[in-house]
Length: 606
Image (cartoon, rainbow, N blue to C red; front, side):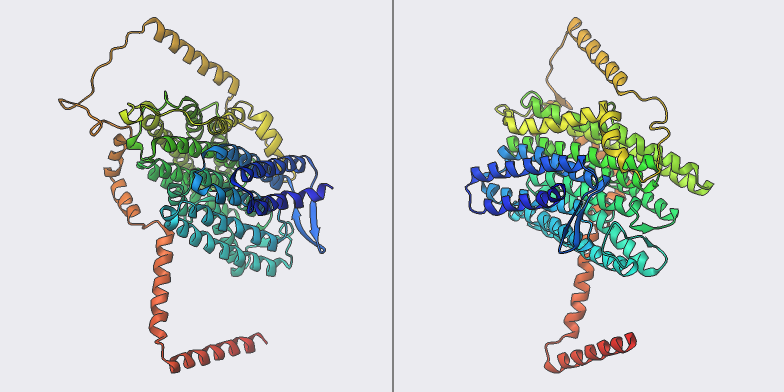
């Protein structure tokens, strides 16, 4: 019976999606809600069980271990919460298609988490990538280009995954991904490792395969963004990355770990600098979705127990507060009709429940204690220090520079979200938004469930996420002697925060003397057209040296792998266009040349 749960948790959402083809809109929502609720229940059952297997025709398709159970559980927890929000917010013209695709996203993501067989893994991995494209197309012409970009980059990574797994199969002589132990002892195995890492980085949104994420975040329906790049793709991408680094798929020297950590830090800094100057709220969140992956890569890349836990914990935290931030911004965008931060302001009083959710998410992603984002970042920092302690002086310098840059990235994240919160909620309310009201109960309730998770996972960090979900994932024999370096007690920090707020409120009411004056720019009163927004202060960053040149290069797509892939494809296309002139004898010559090459290959193989 338990083993059948592995089959049901994948098949039930597919059945729901098929039934939804013929049911009206209301029933689509009801059936999707029931289906996702059932998969959530099954994921809890599977998480509580021992390691399970499901076989078909004597081939083991699905398997579980502690890491797979952890990923599976939160795929379904986050899907359920995002679905609650989506029941009332999805645009009417795309609801039918959205509730066809939503159950499939849950099913295919569950399939990736459970697949122990490499063929099953490739199939479900590819299907989740296809859904990114389909969800993006729901925005019509607005999302066509970004969807195509995501499809090409993710499709390329799927090819890399297939190449990597085929080489691993040839090297290990098994299709069981839990039994593969491929040493980097040959060029082919190194190619397989690079292919697998790039595939994981594409799904998660890490450098250099990240560029589809900000564009998709800007154009796709916000519920799709919250579900896929903010939540599911982060979980699945880092899941594969963790399996590569800690689950025995490959055997490699520690130099590989150091290279991975450097890539993680570069991802943090590069993406947060791009987020800092954005005026479009969705794109700002999209770049932060990339930046936060850097902390996961950095932590897991250290290879030590506290780094593994810290990286995986940050993966979970990011999926929670990033989905929260996208959904809260989606609510604001729905009410204002714009994603431009320059056009917003003063919405905290109009949308208080949305503001609370957004504020908690912003503080969590910025690493403010006692919320969950602080603790996972702190664990990542510790892991880098622990990794540096066992290295030579040169590598100690490199890793300590990585640590400083990671901390600096967190400071820039805070600066970016000060802009985000101020621009949307705390600055002056434009007159055109005087009639704005709070979103529906389903919207703000789903939003604040995610915010509540940020609080609980920060205050009860030892009892719930670390002890219950993360410690069982560590490889056998691993221990953590000190979960923290220094003193950290969430309850005490919360107490002092509460006291400071209470004292501030008391002082405010005792000495309440507020004078309201008109605003002036120079000597002229401000108008709607020339009011000061919370975004303009950060525009000066673009003109600082050396950032000015870097931002100029970024605007020219010098860091966009999609640009280079397109240029190379067009170059090859031009060559083949010149070689194939359309004349019959030219095609005959190419056919003969191909036959000769294939014959020579077959002869050499014999």
